Image (tube, rainbow, N blue to C red; front, side):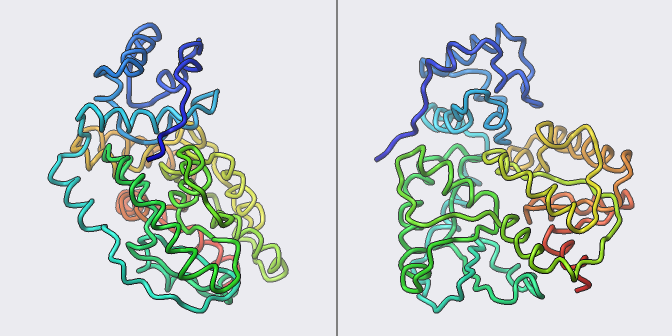
Length: 339
């Protein structure tokens, strides 16, 4: 089995330890952070492993592109540090086991992998999505979610089979080379996790927002600028591929939306709280959600725009109570097209 390609010597030479010092959930002075990180590299238990809320933020904070969170998750599993109660983890692993019953289908040239959000396929409607084929389900579930559970071995075991299923059932038989990833997690799996772990990806992953942006360019004459202020809620998994964040700004510019300048956005984004709730750190959940939503409201946002459906379902109630409208990016774009 392939193993994560991470170079501990790069971390050892790092003077800033940004992956820990910029973390919004771990509070350690620099020297202590260095000590605790060195414990991890020696295979010992560390405060970093027990305090980590698995938000993926350190993936973006690392100035050396050395993927510290992937390493943290692996070490948690090796040392039996379970951020989520074991019965909950086992249940999730079992429930989302590939069923092996997906059927090969004829696909249009634009194929969108819905991952495990097939219930939302009906939302992909109108001019933007007029010629797409969607698929999803457990056979096509990217399984990166298990990094939140310190079960990276599950991800490693299942991803090659998922890739093979996608190629066999949807892409190869239809002579399609590009796979549009509905969720940040899938895109991060195929563009970052897989290469780091020696897993071949025989198709070209395309970010969902890149697809939307290109379609909006084609439909530019149909856009009616919304002229509204919005807050953007980044997903945890978007921290793996921060280079895609510009598509958010590009889309907002096209549809006449202002992304408000606030404290908890971009590199300083806060988790929606879903992972922290699974860890049963309920006081922390309330704290980060309140800070996040209050920040949106204080800076004049009328809408909160989401990329991740789980973030949407987790935060929508608090967003609405503050007088803002929660909305997925795709629906906001449809609104700009009058649909």
